[in-house]
Amino acid sequence: MKKLNLAIIGQGRSGKDIHGTYYRSEANKYYNVKYVVDEDAHRRAVSEEIYPGCKTFSDYRELFNIDDIDVVVNATYSNLHCEITLDLLKHGKNVLVEKPFARTKYECENMIKTAKENGVHLAVFQQAFYAPIYLKTKEILDSGIIGKVKQISLRYNGFSRRWDWQTLQKRVAGNAYNTGPHPIGMGLGFIDFPEDLKVVYSKLDNTPMCAGDSDDYAKILFTGKDKALVDIEINNIDAFPSYTIKAQGTMGTYLCTQLDYKIKYCVEGENVERAPIDTFLYDEQLNPAYCGEKFITHEETGKFDGTPFDVGTAGLYEDMYYALTEGRPMMISPANCADVIQIIECAHAENPLPVKF
Image 1 (cartoon, rainbow, N blue to C red):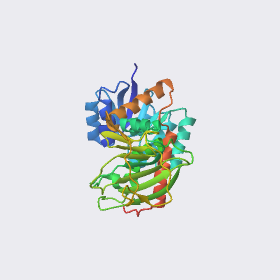
Image 2 (image 1 turned 180 degrees about the vertical axis):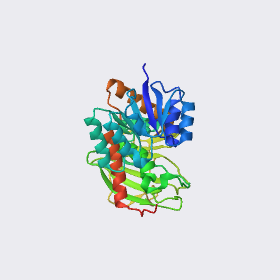
Image 3 (image 1 turned 90 degrees about the vertical axis):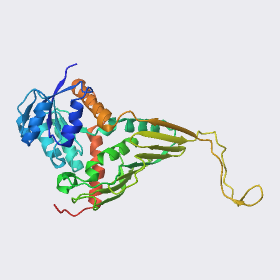
C-alpha cells in the first residue's frame, strides 16, 4: 500500500497532539508526514525530530509550488480555517481542514464550491463521527429497539476554567464553535441531516469560568419534520456531569458516557394494553388509587472500544485515504459539516455577545 505525502499546517495542541499522535501510531498505514508548517521556530525544530526527514516552513504559501503533496491538513487558528483552505484549494491542493469548518455556512459553501471548481478533495476533521460512541449509538437508535426516538440529549459539560485563545471571539472560538461541532454533528447524524433543519431555541453566555469574551455556556435545540428534538448542552459550569448522550424513545431509553452505554426498553406485545378509564381508580379495598403497574422490561449494557481521539481519528484518516486514492465518498461530507456551522451561526446571531478583545 502506497503512503500518501502529507503536509500539516500548525503544530499546536491539535496539530501536534491529536493529528500528530495518529501520524506516529501503528494505525497510520496511509500517510507520510513530509512537510510541516508553523510560524514558531521551536515547533519547527521539534517537528524535524518527531518526523525524521520532513521539511519545515514558517509560511504555508511555501507549499504552493511543491508537486509531491497529496493532502494538506489545515490545523491553524479557527479564524484562519476558511482563508487558508481557500488559498490551498485554489492552488490545487487536497485539504483536510480542522473543525470548526468556518464561521458561517456561506464560507463553508464557498470552500465546497472552490474545491469542485479546482477538481480537488475537501474534507473536514470531525472525527467524532468515526468514534465508537457515535457509530454504536446510531446503530442502536436506528434499530428501533427503544421505539420511535422523541428526544436526544447530548451533554459536553464540565467544571473548569479556560483562558487560552479558544476563549476569544476574534479567533472564532468559544464552546459552540470549538466543542460544538462534535455533539451538534452527532445530533444531526442521529436525525439524518434533515433538509428542513431548524433551530428552535438557543442561548449562549459568558461566565466567570471563561477569561475571554466568547461563550462557555451553550444551549441549542434543533429538529426537523417528524424528527426527534435534539438538545445540545456545552458548558463549563456543570460540577456534576452525569452522561454524554441520552435518547428517549416510545419504548425505552438509551444512556451513555464516553466509556459505556446502557439501554432499558419494553418489547411490543409483552405488556398488556390499557384503555383509558373515565372515572376514579380504586384498589382492591376500594381506596383511591393511582395508575401503577410492573412493566416487563429488558436491559442491555456495553462498553465503547476506543475514543474520538484514537479510533475516531484513525477512522477518518482511513476514510480519506480511500477517498483520495479510489474516489470513494467519505461517510461525512463537507455539506454535512456546513449544516453544523449553520446551527452554530444561528445561535450566535440569536445571542450576540459583546466583543471585548
